[in-house]
Image (cartoon, rainbow, N blue to C red; front, side, top):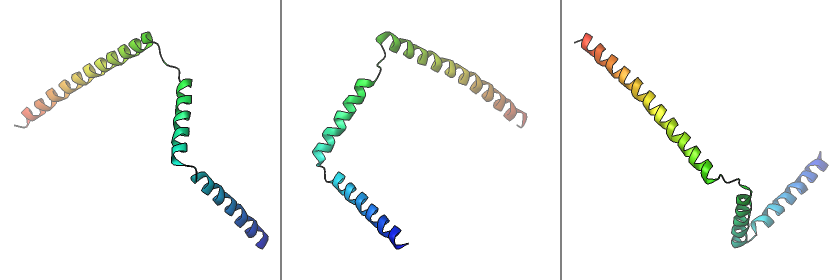
Length: 90
């Protein structure tokens, strides 16, 4: 039992020392590394062409228009029905 706890204590001490070494890296170095990694990821991004962007924008606008009309129809139906119910109880 004691051997396991000593081994665990050594393992915990090693991981703590590794964490401290990682935190001792200068802030400027970490920032530079971050932006280098961001730039490398941006190079891997598949950017759409101008034509694709226009098509996708059109699809979004048409979808918004369709949803807007559907909501307008339901709103009109509900408002007419509520006005009719209110007229019944006057």
